[in-house]
Image (tube, rainbow, N blue to C red; front, side):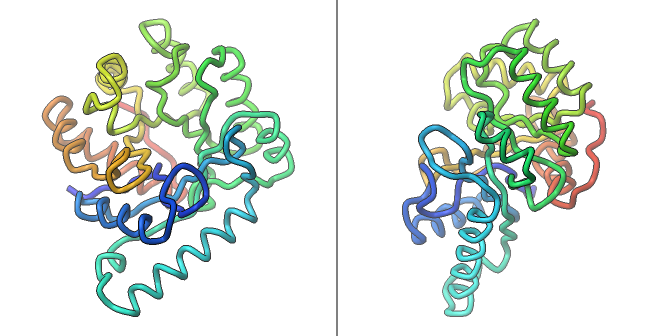
Length: 255
């Protein structure tokens, strides 16, 4: 199976992802070895620990990164990079700064599509999260909610019902691959599994941060999802829907 990783921190020196170009390249090599053939670089934007996040500076950093990758391919010895598509993006943290940039049209979406990767603060209330998602929708964007299994207000039966309502509003939903494997603990694994079982998920991605830390290798994730939920849903979460996002196409109803 081949994968499109919609959520991977791979831009060097921007946030808590790779610290150098060399580490970024090894991160991409790890993803490629695991079967990934397209990666969206989703550095943190508007997050408390990482300054900045507006679209143009992030696009400039991404263009420099792409140029560096192309030079490596031309130099030789990095043929795997020629088999990888790398797209621009950002993991937009719901904050006052983000909302101001959203209103001004200065936020970065996934491959300049209508889809905007949106991260909630960990202890946000459901009402505030919903209001933030509605602001994104009103701006003509589709919120792709990042790693929803992490948020306490979306846990349990009540949380799943809240997530259904968010999807009915027009939000899309992403879950981290490592959560599916239990790397982030049994509770997150249970939450992720229930969301996948109830078909409340549109995309599974790595949230990769480096070659080893939060690895972008999705091979075992694909195998695990295939065994537990079926090969067809696994393909939709890891390939079909992510390809639709980067192509700016509508997502089908989960099911």
